[in-house]
Image (cartoon, rainbow, N blue to C red):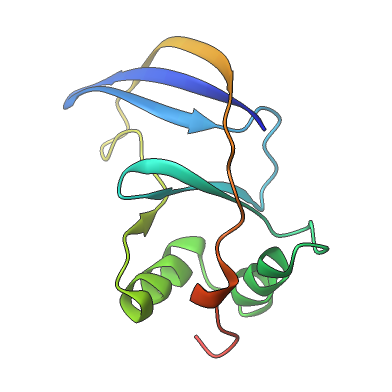
Length: 114
């Protein structure tokens, strides 16, 4: 999958964030232990884990952060969506297109009864 590796300067230093070009509102790059590992697209329902995430996020009207907290707690893992800056100050330094193999979140971590 083609993604953009964008480097930002913030008050806490420089950060590199993986972003989706032409991102839609229900698409996220999910980090595991601060490394990009998974991709969720809630409208690509032919993938079972995306269909489950669609139900958890869109149908239950929860934020992706709340759903990830529940998944983390239940499975003892560290999934997150990176934030560039907590206070909003950021300056884009550079952006490079790259290819990463981002997989859907494993189905065994997801459960309709989260």
